Length: 278
Image 1 (cartoon, rainbow, N blue to C red):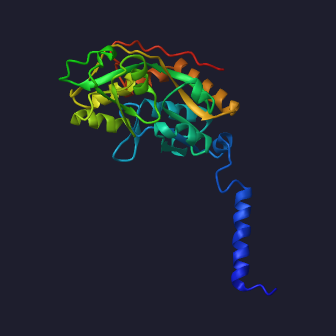
Image 2: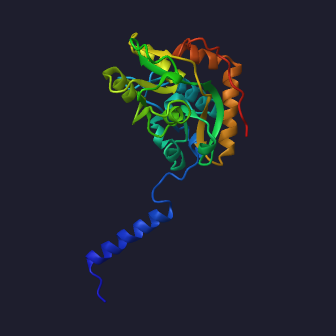
Image 3: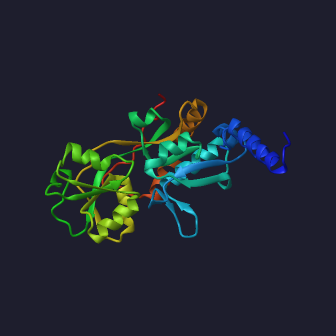
């Protein structure tokens, strides 16, 4: 059979596609250790959490999680200019780790048994507690037990705080799930929701940014251990990150970073958690 030029081109394109598929479909098959050797890391953070992970208008990144990430990267041998920060929405954190879109994630990422089935965690590097945020003039919401009368409660997709409140404290609360906490805060300011729930350290950052418009109410009612999420089975990187967290606590950088980014957190005492080398 005579093979035309068009057919030859088609066969060539198929061969290229098959070769790419054999190499992983063009995805980055390099490990975090490979990236470290190249002096580069892609680290997942939040872009919209004041005091924790926030992208400024000039493109710079500020916050406690950012400082944790930069310190850990330095101990792995990667300079600040070798870090690429990538936004990691709560609902996509495990997927982004498993797909190799990030080397690790430092983004108010609570360690849970369910998440540990998909990814590994270093840390914890901080222990927070779930709390409530309302408008300053609100008087009928004083804590989680007061969330009755079909109050509208906002949290983000892919996170668990709002459902936890409904399951354990206020069965008639109306759950509103948005993509980001900043959207919940805007809904609270507009009056579209009555209250926002997530960890106290996150809410404190938003309250501080709101110039007295918002306030935290009640006591914390969960324990949230923040870890650094990474690919499951990467024990080498996990051990090195755990070492870095312990060094950050020991040399005073952990407390310094918190005080410079978050500041006082209500009546909480700043006590570093013990790293869990499970």
